[in-house]
Length: 210
Image (cartoon, rainbow, N blue to C red; front, side):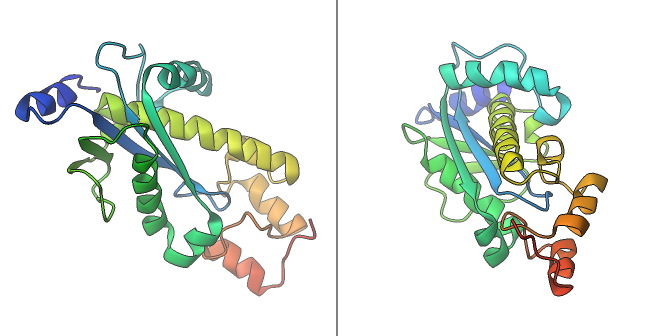
């Protein structure tokens, strides 16, 4: 359950803390597409109604909240490509995306609240991790919504370039349709070659011709 007191208590604990960024990422599990992270500094006097964990909200609700968050908050977004994911692994790519998103805020944050239990390296401000933070913290919940909507839209666009894999519905996850398409159409440049199912298909010579 979201606790609006998290940011309030943090600000009251230290007079130097004003701008608190909530950070979350989406796309660690999919077999295709980038990993996407978002940092959000909410305006305490203008918080959109209905914020919640993006995983618990319907696609329609996430879409309805997306623009109000962008209109009322300072938002930073970052994608880390499949090439980098394959080079440094998905965990490190996710942490990198979080740090990059924080750096894309219009103004620096005084403090960062990070979903999960791992802190990215070289953070430019003090930070704290929150396990299940997207279900507990308003700013992390807002970040999870923007990251999810942004990445889902990107995967829809990629699905139009590479039809058949069902990315517009599965966002790159290894669904039955995705597996079937991989067997029929092969591996594209947007697939994560370091992931075992994709690596196995490449070893079998299963490349896409598109």
